[in-house]
Image (cartoon, rainbow, N blue to C red; front, side, top):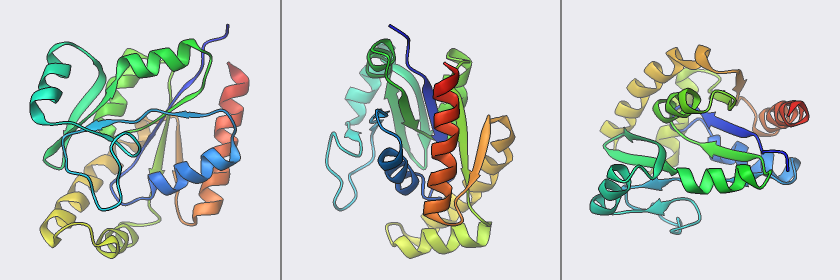
Length: 188
């Protein structure tokens, strides 16, 4: 059986990665989303095992020490990680796997799995990103400012990705992303 392809979606907080990913999955059949682990608390409406696996610090620490993570990083005062076993099982079954992870984690995965396809989701502008972050109303002003500072550093690393897609309009960006996925899946 042919091994699946690994796709990595990254971009600054608030750029709309989750929204575009949802539309992508409607456009491209057979994709598998790898659910990340996190130590942050669930936001309103989030369900454990759907958006994330919500772990306490002790469990996360044990996963790190036992090398269960393909990648993990501290982002905005919380830790996030991708379970190696989940990804490997799906790739071995021939499925294309999508990781939606931060830049730190993406660079870790690319180092371990250079065949992975990295796609950076860009905001139309930093001003628009700021508007989106404040508009979603999920964090205090200081946290939004931290996310914006981090976004500038992340944007500087976007050149290390295989592709960049500007999320200026969700449907257009999702269509561009679907074209990239189809092209890359046909290569393997």
